[in-house]
Image (cartoon, rainbow, N blue to C red):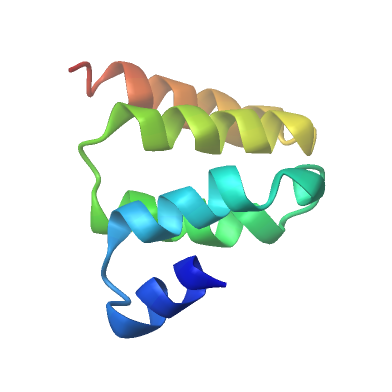
Length: 80
C-alpha cells in the first residue's frame, strides 16, 4: 500500500498519517485502529482543524463522547 510506504519514508508526514487514518481505513471506522494515525497527525500538525474534526468523528463512532467533544473544541480553536 503506497500510503504505508510514504509513512515509512517520512514518519513525520502529518498528511500521510491523517489520510491513512481517515480515508484509507473506512471499513474500520468503528474500531480504534484509525485513531492511532489521526492522533499522530494531530501531534505532527496541530494547527489543522480538519484533523481534529476527523478525530472527533472517529471518537464519536466509538462512543467516546467526552474525548470527541474535546477534539471538536480543539478544532474550533483552529479555524482556517
